[in-house]
Amino acid sequence: MFLLNILLAIAWSALTGQFTPLDLAFGFALGYGILWILRRQLRGERYFVKAPQIVRFAVYVLWEIILANLNVARVVLLTPKERIKPGIVAIPLDIRSDAEITMLANLITLTPGTLSLDVADDRSCLYVHAIAVGDPERFRRGIKNGFERLVYEVFN
Image (cartoon, rainbow, N blue to C red; front, side):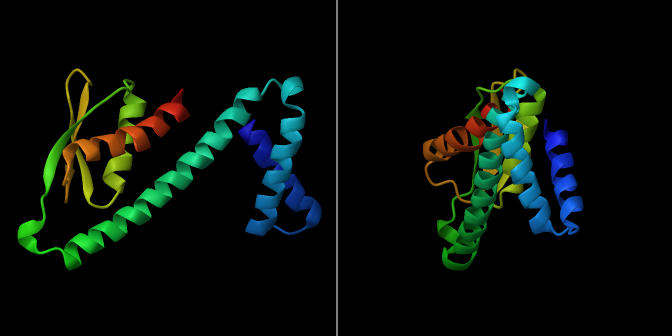
């Protein structure tokens, strides 16, 4: 369904004669609407559940990266060196597949101020280093209710 949606976007741009990002985006949105109307005939209902989840996931990740950049800048520029409390926190995992754990670990590492270090042999937890932990339980909840929850939604 996604490839069909892309083809419809390209077809729209070809019909209008303009291959600008705005025209492609409009064609993609128009194609999405057409496919949504035909979803039962094309048996593509899962696409219409996953597409909004993926968009929400991408927006959330971008927002978290922006916030993390601001937080790291605040910690580096405004916090006295002796008050910075870096640490390693074990995050218990509800996700189990290699793809899910890899995605979560990469998202954490992409976020400034955090680094995924290791996964337990039994895949029960992920060890994460943070530049400023503060409250470890709050840090855990942030990862579990944010990145891990969204990774689970996208993959399942």
